[in-house]
Image (cartoon, rainbow, N blue to C red):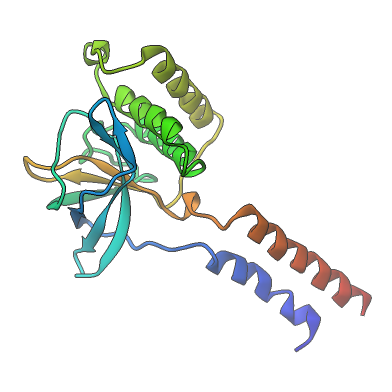
Length: 213
């Protein structure tokens, strides 16, 4: 195969390295009771479990909680409406506000970038929960308001600066039991930087060699 032709396959390879996730109108959420740690008596995400789509496909999943007002138990499940973060209709979500979910997504990405830092994970989780509450509820004693506000301001600044989270989903319980979760999409699960650099470097080398040949 000629190098010039081979160079066209690398962008395709780069795109296929990103995981894909199918959307549906409703999913069945199962939480298996696993979590990252405990803070002030509350379990800190991500939580382990699975999603079963309306088509019957079950996928192991990590859930990030964006709902402080509702509590759940381990080894339980419920049906949830699915709203894409890129949707223009958030009427089926608890907050009905895209900016809130984008801010939460940014905070979750910070958790994902520091998977073994339990103290930071706890702070980011509380910042998400603080953001989800009404001003009256934010006066609760569980919160480190100064730190929560600082992180939430960083999140809002990132959103105003153009932060986007393609492929993310919001899972909102349809009944009286469950918590609202967010599930990261491909935009949060891109290959490691070193992988991307190697792929791009390979593209540059092949294009250079094909032109030289």
